[in-house]
Amino acid sequence: MYYIGIMSFETNLFEANLSLQLPLRGMLGTVGTIAKEGLSALWKGIVPGLHRQCLYGGLRIGLYEPVMNLYVGENFVGDVPLMKKILVGLTTGALAIAVANPTDLVKVRLQAKAKLAPGVPRRYSGALNAYSTIEGVRALSTGLGPNVARNAIINAAELASYDQVKEASE
Image (cartoon, rainbow, N blue to C red; front, side):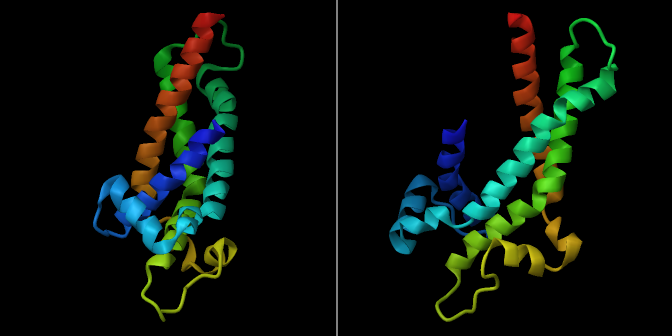
């Protein structure tokens, strides 16, 4: 699973361009950005990216069983219906990204600081500085709605299908 995280840094650079409403040019545009900003441009935002992976990944998987027990009961015997698994996946994905959303915001802002014109002062010296200086809880929740919708659906598909296949193979 770690290789997926490493490969996603290129798409994170692409997402930063998207959220900043910069012209989209696909993979070739990303290669052009690397040529202009250097290979290190792929690593901008890695610290909050890792914060996100730890928080989101840990919570979405760690909460799956407790939320499943909440929905079906701890003494449930038999196969859990697929719709319940999907509902549990939606719930845990939404809860996890609600906690991890500030890390996405900081990641995008750190990736965007490379796009400032020369001579323009940088707003943040790093990830921890960005977390502490972003303008309150409301600002840290920027983009929460779409982020919850996207991650809840992805999590439901991943965990419910995994649980269903695991159950069928037993």
